[in-house]
Amino acid sequence: MRCFLLGGKVCNSFIKRYFNCSSVATMSTTLSRQHSVYVTRNVPESGIQLLTSAGLKVTQWKHDAAVPREELLTNISQVDALFCLLTDKVDSELLDAAGGSLKVIGTMSVGHDHIDMEECKKRGIRVGFTPDVLTHATAELTVALLLATSRRLMEGVQAAKDGSWGTWKPTWLCGPSLQNSTVGILGFGRIGQQVAKNLGGFDVGKIIYTARTEVASCAQRVEFDELLLQSDFLIICCALTDSTKNLFDKNAFLKMKKSAILVNTSRGPVVNMDDLAEALENKEIAGAGLDVTVPEPIPLDHSLLKLNNCVVLPHIGSATNEARSAMSRLTAENIIAALNNQKMPAEL
Image (cartoon, rainbow, N blue to C red; front, side, top):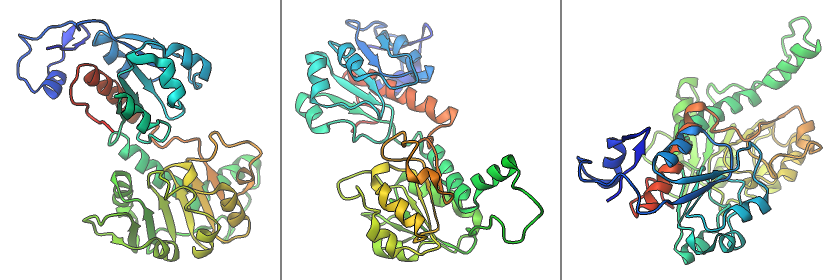
């Protein structure tokens, strides 16, 4: 059996987690051969340190910007593992370039629509992802974005900076309150449920949700049309699938309250961006907060960026130091476990 070295010392808890043993005395401290991994971005060191401590040869694109496609296709050749992000398209072209040595792909994300799962399955390539570790961070950001949009914080910041903040005005920069409101959540998985929990201190009137299955919760499950009709605040927390792509289109916006606030921290393609811009311009809904767009980054001349009733963030839902470090570490753990023919902590 093999074990992993962390800073020159055997990490007992890590070994127990994967090998279900209480002692490391009889375990080898070296791999049968040195495996190689290509890391497509500058990521938190927690993951890199784990990979190198396990004896892997790490090649890395050490930049914050995405690795150019040609660079990726060149460096993927003959590696055993790929440590990638949402921006890295893993398709048959890339898998062909990797050759037959690629055994595992670890994506530092919950979403995995950038990976051709069928092609990976066909080639026997295992795929790991990072659920759970970003739940709290994303749920925190979701509530922050909801408040920034509904309470018009960006307009307030701008007014303080540009001198338009004058004497106190009773009706200036007013927005809807969460108190006694109906909050609707599309998708009631880990993040959706945590958002509902985070809203517990705001004295909301009720929380409703739409999901494929009913969840034991104080929230009420409703059909999608009811979610649209009832919600004062509608929060998108669902996965991107064929059935959710462009789910929020012109027809959906027409069913929503004119006073409704839409928040999307899941995946950009769930919302039709052009239809949203039109709905906001025509006051069909009151406002929108987006942490995800199509494309990313959103073009600077996009009409949504010109609207005061739309707050756009640069996909920072999981951007806490703790969450990003945990994501990097879990990605590395997935890769190491797969290379050692062990159960991965989080496998697709």
